[in-house]
Length: 423
Ligand SMILES: NC(=O)c1ccc[n+]([C@@H]2O[C@H](COP(=O)([O-])OP(=O)(O)OC[C@H]3O[C@@H](n4cnc5c(N)ncnc54)[C@H](O)[C@@H]3O)[C@@H](O)[C@H]2O)c1
Image (cartoon, rainbow, N blue to C red; front, side, top):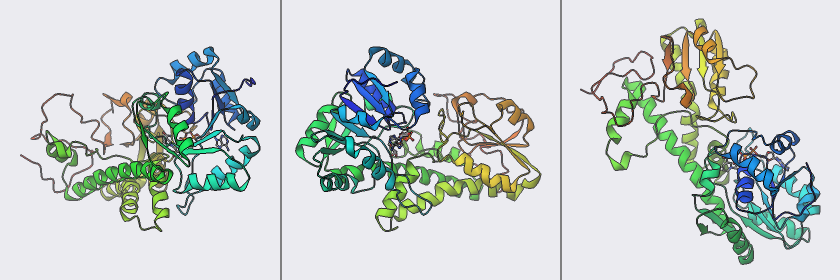
């Protein structure tokens, strides 16, 4: 689908998790938007009114903006020339040595270079390695180009982008005042508040937001593992220590901390600081190590090689269909070596041909592991099967009910050696 009408905003990587909700939000605000992406299949699905991944509210909004004529799609880089503003949502992954892979963004820019126009506002929206915005300005300058360069990071939580774009303050930075002011005007159309930083400050702010979150999850997971070693039910401890105690109310529950952003961004900071981001490294060891801890615990009390293990939930987080960097797959890999058989299921994931129906996995497994607490698992009939539940999900009480701190709750289903229960 390729019209040739100039658009106000062109989103590079506009068919992705960051690009598409942003395109929809701008189109909803009345702007004409062009999605430019190299993934033809995603473009085809979006043009047909189909959202290629789970994103709250997008399925309703997409047909609306398509019908309005304000959303165009193209895989032709030449179309970028028409737009007043170009927003880049291509990320910087880390490689097998945990170093940033800068060439994706560089290659993307170099493809666009012949089509970028002097005077255009060029916004970096993806999470970038510190210094990328200034590099971009120098790179364009070296090619004799004169664009307005800005960095305005996306900070929404995946799956809730449409809601959060309208609720969260937008960090705004520009290489020049003119770039900053134009970017602020643009994002004021969708965000409730803008916050000004210098480009390097905004780059670090985004990475710190994610690394902080990753470390928070690691503390929860480490507390959990300490309690397992002591034979104490951590979810009861957490409930007790945070009940009506404001300074503990934000401690997360233990669980798999995964996905395409937190690990990667923590490792970018580590690479930036010559591998001296010690808390970031420790968080990585704890969060990734939780998978190994679970396998070891099972192996210490049962003959894993005789067990068929069923994994419930393969997405990287609850109520989502995205499997990128999901720790469920790391667990699967480890268990495929140690257990007799591994069966997997997920109600949302559509990209894995090995997934089985939930009932079949429960039926055929000797032991179940809850990898991701999807809402649809609430009240699930586990047919009396033993279940490892680090999240405390199957033991959750109804909201508002009195915490039963005297009750022995077996959170994981694993034998708790030397259990010391409060009360
Ligand atoms: N997923 C999130 O919720 C989230 C939140 C905040 C920040 N981020 C950051 O945003 C960036 C993008 O993440 P994402 O989750 O949207 O990734 P994604 O893989 O879902 O989307 C990237 C899109 O870019 C397209 N693409 C890749 N190379 C291209 C090129 N050269 N030209 C045109 N299109 C190209 C892909 O086809 C894809 O549609 C990353 O830096 C990520 O860390 C993601």
